[in-house]
Image (cartoon, rainbow, N blue to C red; front, side):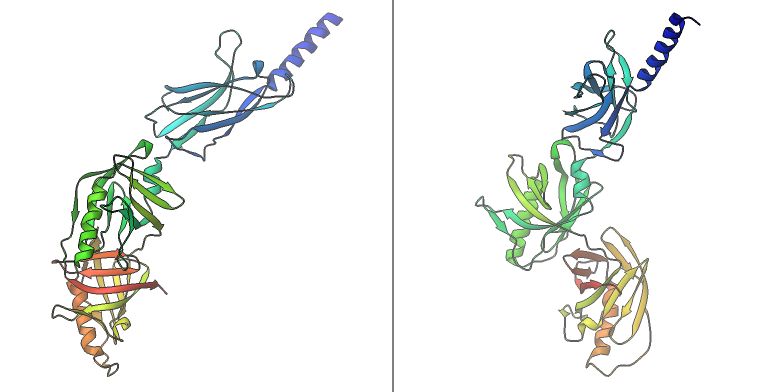
Length: 366
């Protein structure tokens, strides 16, 4: 074999090695990252053997339609060395729920892809919905009629829970509910009129409640900062400020009664009231009625509850005084319950007319 043939074979071999050593790789974001539509996306990666270090980053939908494409430059010590590249890209609105991200090095002649990265599939995250849901927001301040932020009246709790297009909570006395829509750029709008129960409240609480519902109806956008939810009106002014708390649940909590309807129109309490307990688990409520243990089935739908007839043991307790009468009142109050509400560390059961039947405080279930 002559030298020319050997040279050609060697050149071909080296060319294959060099070509196989060329690559482009996306490092961030990876398939585990969520994309926020209203924030620039930092795209970074590595490469080697790219013509003049040129990189093109391309976002497209899952059908291959181009969303945005921008150039970047790979930084390297010399032409043959590997290098890194990075750029920030703002996605055009509206952003689809799923994206494909590709980086490539263009051909020096045609400009098409000469070296292409492995595509990265990404999901977009609606920051408003994802951050609002799963959190119980307790109101700390609201905009009063003088244009100042004012704290909530002591010993009243106003809260909001957002889930699946519906916001519910306590307005301080009555329960309220409304639909809402959220979208890009932190938009948050309530759909139509806010519904609420019609219980009588103390005058100061009633005034605060009505003012709160008016402000809530005027909300246009939201922002969350370090666990604080700010709701803005259409003029961009903060009207409501909440603090994040883990939402209470009816089930898997041990509830101790703090007030029981005596059957004569009053909710009363005494030193023995907390002997009445309730634990709701998988359609069964059980606990102590004060002297005897009881259990009953229950069904819930939204804020509605129905508790079936209770089965109880048959002991007679002489102490504490009046415990047997209280026990009977407690079981009757449970049977009358048709509505329930959770506020702070408190559970309230009410009948179909909104009359309070039992008030509970929470402690961890054993």
